[in-house]
Image 1: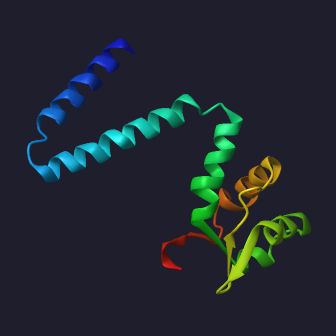
Image 2: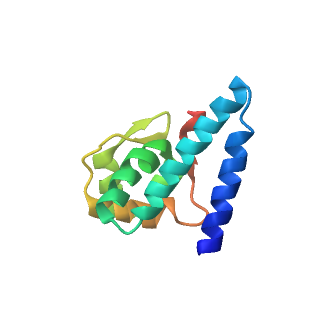
Length: 125
């Protein structure tokens, strides 16, 4: 562990020293911000409240559920989708930041992390 940490610091120092022009400096700021965010997520990966808030903020709001997937859901999941999503252009878009933890976990398990589903990133809406 200690050697890995030392190697990481060496690489980060080397990377920082190579940031000479403005474009590189901007790239470096983005990279270091990314490292901070990822470190925070790893530090808090067992904190259920942190996970719940991140699922809402970064995951659910960035994915849509198409009507094909919706039609194949059981009654309970359809109810959760109906209560927390709006239908727009034949896709269900997340619309409720006050969703319960249980509903978030169920959506993640049964829809978003299920293999072969039709959940898509929102970039193409």
